[in-house]
Image 1 (tube, protein in one colour):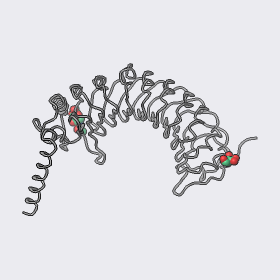
Image 2 (cartoon, protein in one colour):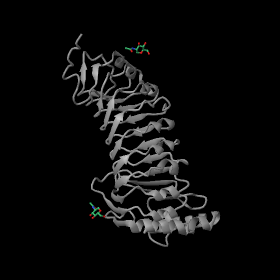
Image 3 (cartoon, helix red, strand yellow):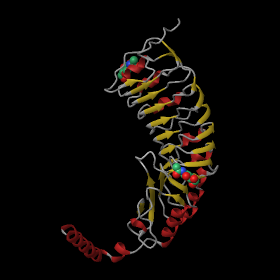
Image 4 (cartoon, rainbow, N blue to C red):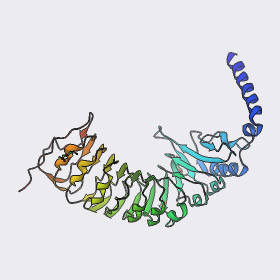
Amino acid sequence: MTFTSSSATSLLALTLLCFSISAYTCFANCHIDDETGLLAFKAGITQDPMGKLSSWIPGTDCCTWSGIWCLAKDKRVSSLSLYEEGDPDFTLSGTISPSLSKVRYLQGLLLQNLRNLTGTFPTFVFDLPDLNGLSLDNNKLTGSLPLDIGQKLYRRLVTLTLSGNQFTGQIPSSISQLVHLRDLDLAGNQFSGPIPSGIQQMKNLVFLKLEKNQLSGKIPNLFTPLTFLRELDLSHNKLSGEIPPSISFLAPRLELLNLGHNLLTGKIPDYLGNFEKLERLDLSYNQLTGVVPTTFRNLTSILHLELGHNHLCGPIPPMKFKAEAFLGNDCLCDSPLPACKK
Ligand SMILES: *[C@@H]1O[C@H](CO)[C@@H](O)[C@H](O)[C@H]1NC(C)=O
Ligand SMILES: *[C@@H]1O[C@H](CO)[C@@H](O)[C@H](O)[C@H]1NC(C)=O
């Protein structure tokens, strides 16, 4: 009883508040194009066992539907964000309806960890002039990326994350036209061929994650302008050649460098010891030779270091690990390195 009367009171209070501001803002439904586009998206979902879209009911205000955000000024839908964080068995099946392009002012399209969304890269996003974030991680998208993806999305895309799908083919070189990108994550797909050298134009990158693909060739020496980079992960590919010298320009900000599980040769560069912020460094499972540089003494932020499964030699320099730090599972300290041949 108390509950009922108090919710009645708050409903009354809300109603009064609404009339005192503007009845339109409170009660009007969302734009018909937005509703149509979203309901078409819902129609493309064939199985929704957890009822993620159960609040998406025709005729109700789509700004109140789960996963939907609207702009305050005109109630146009600005973001569609559906993701599953916890439940590993969660699935949502179906395809991404191209009618979503009716949701004209969409800035963010985030469909992450839904696991059973199929189809190819949704090219209708090219028709969304305000799109600044596209995240479609951990679904079952297939096919190659459109060759003109960079031209078509260049306007102001800040986030492009497509990790954990089944995309194939090369990373289109046009991707380097996405010069506003801060987060590029194509990890965990089946991309092959080289890393596009045009990536050096993407000066705003903070995260560059291309791990767990089939990328081959040398790591291009393109890092000089990428001074905002905090995470560079190229691990679990087929990259060969030496660690390129321009990686030294990442010293001021880099926190994660993972080049493990590739075919890299040559020495571990001395300059890595100058990376003051570096917390995680993994160069394991390559064909690196020579010594662990004495400059590694200066890696004062390091939490996690993996250098195992290479052809390194000589003593490990004494290092100042932070608490909780450890050397990787093929711990160099357990199995001391062979002495270097003179
Ligand atoms: C995934 O989607 C396919 C086709 O839409 C369907 O047959 C299958 O049952 C779905 N799998 C799961 C685990 O929901
Ligand atoms: C560590 O850094 C200090 C100060 O930047 C420098 O003087 C010293 O030579 C470095 N030590 C090694 C082993 O690189």
